[in-house]
Each structure stands twice: as C-alpha cells, then as structure tokens.
Length: 181
Figure 1 (cartoon, rainbow, N blue to C red):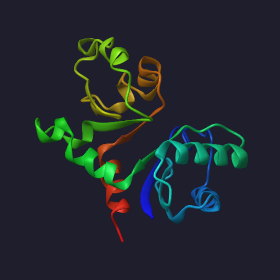
Figure 2 (cartoon, rainbow, N blue to C red):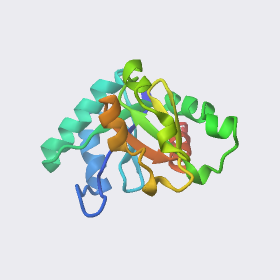
Figure 3 (tube, rainbow, N blue to C red):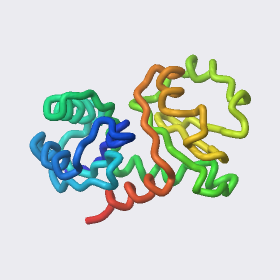
Figure 4 (cartoon, helix red, strand yellow):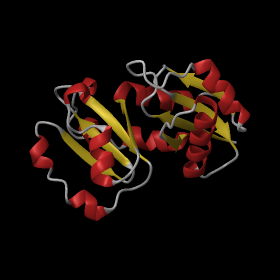
C-alpha cells in the first residue's frame, strides 16, 4: 500500500460546496482507500491505496464526490513521496530564503505544455513570482494569496489544466501526515 494525498479544490469556501470531513472520509473508504484521515476543512485527504495511478485515483474520487454530493470538485492526487520532493525543491526557500507566510504551492494535474508556459509573461505579475517544476508551481506572493492574480483560475486558463493551491505550512503538514506510520 502506498500513501497518497488528495487535494480538493473549492470546497467549504464561502458556503459553497459544503462537505463534512466525516462524510468525506466515509465515502473515500468506500472506494477502497485505507487509513483515511483528513486535514482541515478545505479538502485534504491522506490515505493508502494499492493503485499507483494518481490521475485514475483523482477521477475515482471526483466521481464519488459527484455521486454522493451532486457537484463537481476538481481533485489532484499526489504520492506521499512526491510531497517530499515538493518540500525539497522550493526555490523561494532554498535559494532566496523568503518568508514562508508568502509562499504557496499550486498543484497541477500534470506537467504543462511548455509552449503554453512560454506564453506567460512573468514580468507582468511583479512583485509576485512563480516557478514551474514539472507539475508543481511554486508561488511567491508578497501581498498574500488573496490579492494575487496568480490564482487557480489563472493557471487553469493559461495552462489548460486543473489546479489547486495550498499555503506552505499546509504542504509541510500534509507531507508530515503522509510519512507518519
């Protein structure tokens, strides 16, 4: 069994797409996931599963949420070991030692098309910055994520991929939870 984290986008925000974590945990167990735990109400699920295919797991979870709650929720699934890499490779921490309160990670469903990425003029968004590594976008938002133009919608439109973002402290905690026995 391998540990995974499912990162749901847009639940329990401003009274929209309300999902109680106890119910979510129950439904995730019903699709064959084991050792299921949730972290905060924004939709982070840590679980074990026999599969190795994160895209397939995401689709199964999306389908289950739709069947049980009646609305679409984009889901991105990462292997626990992938989160270790995310923590190790953040250029805003490793190279510049920026304040972690202004660092975010946008998880993409897969690596973006390099041509679409080249079309984004990063200088337009200063002082905000981003670095894409594979299917991870590291964000530095010195005015806070609530004020950035580099939102999930931005990356979804520009890169034509599903995206969901977490602050740095949440990513650290999810990695810790994935590596607990």
